[in-house]
Image (cartoon, rainbow, N blue to C red; front, side, top):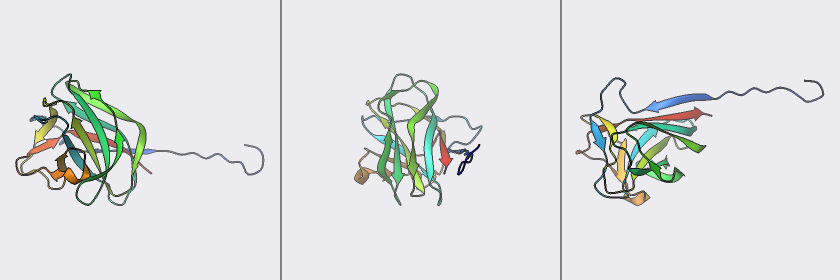
Length: 168
């Protein structure tokens, strides 16, 4: 490069995945609801790092069910402000993937990936059996901050979700 005050700058992105699933463990079934409009959210802790969420991989056991994928900023105990909504998607049996239209930044040290089931038919989000389930990870609600609750003792599922983040 010639001239004054000119230089080349190289940037690189470091992409990492956060995976709830246990590698090599078989699926135990499909999570979902018998009511329309409910959401299942999974907490991801990032410590003190700000992260950009860019892609989510997950598995379904059914085909043709409508759903939405959402990203929420985390609070101490529940999903908080909505950062991203995919709009209506349709599942397929097996591996599914969604790349966010633009990466969203989480700054609180915790974010939630949520799946909203649109119809009253279980959309069969694949899980691995987990007893006891980890506390402070899985939440259900209707997307309203005041209505989130930690999935309790009857919830024994480790939902298979892998989230790709860019460390800023």
